[in-house]
Length: 231
Ligand code: ADE
Image (cartoon, rainbow, N blue to C red; front, side, top):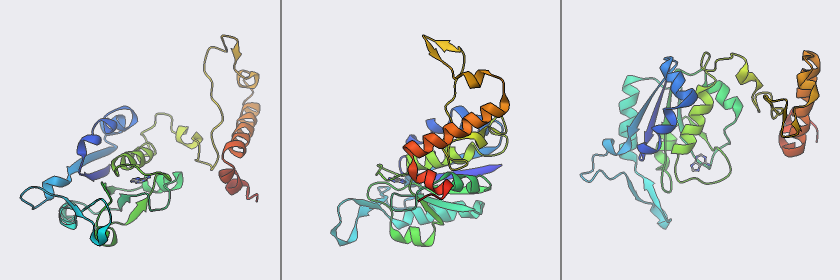
């Protein structure tokens, strides 16, 4: 079973998103277990302080080394981590390829930063992987840790009911997914494309591929070029 630990200064942000839908089903099936650790519990300061001013006069608070080092060292006595991940905007963007690789892990640890970030020595000494979830700045690493966890957990074999459905996802082959439809065939005059109702599997599959390619070229030419090596 995969195990995920998440260290956070705002643990309440994490509980609900990890207690519903696919992630909850994965927990129920014993395919993943997740523990959330409150960083403040590891502070030796009498006021449980976990942050301080940045050296060099930069604005904003930084998470101090002591609680983070102590918490990670404590967790490392129990588990060997395949990845100690620090979500941060100053890192490469997390992709489906990264999710695929991480889904084969046994133990993953997330360190969630807050305020201005975490002391660089924690990144240099403890963190093994850094990822951004996109080119915008969030208030902390909790939402990115949830995003990355969700992307990984749904790929663990047995989590999704239909074993092939993760393979059809957008990005899995570098392209965006084709449109999907369900009943009724006509809703308020709006029709489901004829080919999807034809029962001709070869035609349906060709239609899907074309839709996928056209949509990707139209709205994500960066991805399209990567797949078709067009410049
Ligand atoms: N922390 C703050 N913003 C972030 C982002 N875009 N990706 C990952 N971690 C972050």
